Length: 114
Length: 112
Image (cartoon, rainbow over all chains, first blue to last red):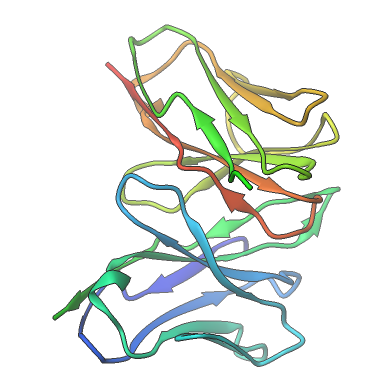
């Protein structure tokens, strides 16, 4: 119940295209869903996050779509650029037992070809 | 403002040795969490500290310990290193226990 399942494992997109990464969770107590971007040799950088009281959040070219009933959420990267080539992680968390831990998906390696 | 800073960036240790990793959170942030990221996987939660107290611990052996200092910086200690401890160790800083977490660049630990 603590798992977050992420797909696809890898993704190749042409420059200007739309990249879509999907995540699913089981625990309905999760109340915070962030996406992180990680470049090789670097730590994850917070991209965008959503709470389950909204169905969509957009920041620039990045959009999270959230489907509470299906227990799924996705990241859409519009007008994908070669600089977006990185590994993307979805995560979920909740406050439980007085602490909060992020549970990460396995990651999606995105390659944007020029 | 400086982000989360971790030191050292890289470290090579021998099996059985002990290691200490350090983290300075973003100014004003009172919570530090530690994560282990094995190559090709997502980060795994080790500890969360808030106001110098351990708030939570992940599924890691007692060889792993941590502490948080009055200035909110933190250290992660790992004793009796195993080859399987080789990973990127990440520190995450947040203002509170249940707020956005920002990661440092990590410490790459290699155990030989």
